[in-house]
Length: 271
Image 1: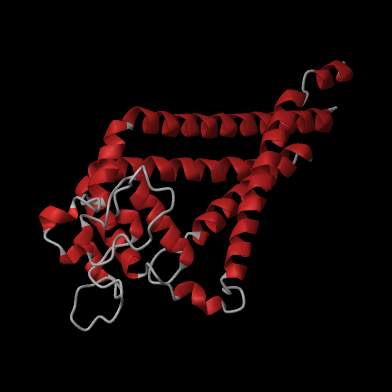
Image 2 (image 1 turned 60 degrees about the vertical axis):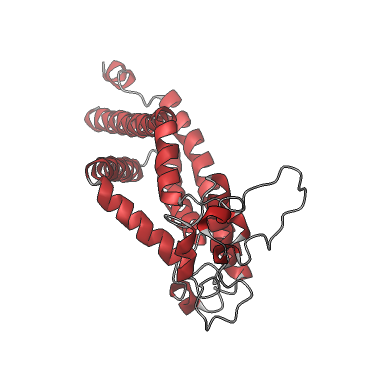
């Protein structure tokens, strides 16, 4: 009778090894992202001077690799080891951590929808802070150039936002050759050119506004981002819903595995 009672409670191998397999990939990917972040900081000399992490006025894109990679590493470790060793503490930690991330994503989405104007102002402030630090960090510079090229924009709300940068402003005391110019990523692309002209933005803002549009993208990145969101609303919503469903699925599987493990332990205790 006791043997029949034990057979009634078994840990599902399918759930166990599905969680293990999925999370080991997650764990390795997180480790890779953290490794890339550390390598990037090493190349920039940040690891030899830790205080320089806070010196940059704008966003250091390496932080994205470190934070995302760190979260993925922790989640992957807890889910992978928790499933393999049938450790209920790690599995519960995995569920709670994943639940917190899901709640934060949901809260962020609701607040972004309710406080759209405030979000727009914060995005404007964020972009302008990064414009000021454009030449201070090569990774930030590449990120801004990619953004302006991808969305065919210039500055937060227009090319004149580049007056905030000490190298591009139009003040009389500015000795920079880039004075009254914009980065090359603001320039309109000529399909006939195979080589990027990195000096195409020089002196461009010294020209009348009516002429600038022939050489550079005059729309700001904030309105272009809004337009992109509107044009790709279905895709963005689909991605968010897909990620949310995966998170809920992961939480349910982990909790199911925890229940199986605790049921087996309880049956062993009473037999």
